Length: 135
Image (cartoon, one colour):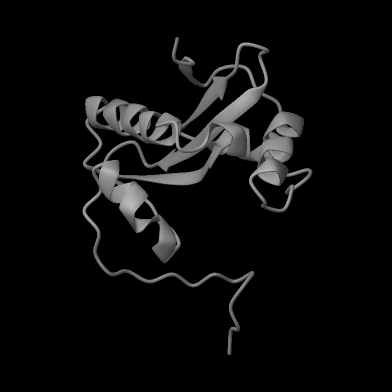
């Protein structure tokens, strides 16, 4: 049985921080209590033991644009299709709400994954204040 993807299901910042650590990111302790309050939506997936194994945030103006942020699948569940299912569920809900597009930024190595999810890939730019020099 495939794990169920829940929109805005119960989750706490400690669980998200633990998942961030499991996928090799910094924990971002102390940020998700505020982040969860400001999102358009978020999606969670739990295993049979009710542990958080998948997560993604969606930011949106509710009209024209939505952005996927922080897609995470626990390493023990990667390559299972779960990440694609999460992205497609979020994209489907965004489309059903009448929002015109959904966007994502990602490392070049993830391009094949996002193509499988249905994204049209084209060039863009980002100013990342945390990781880039700003003159």
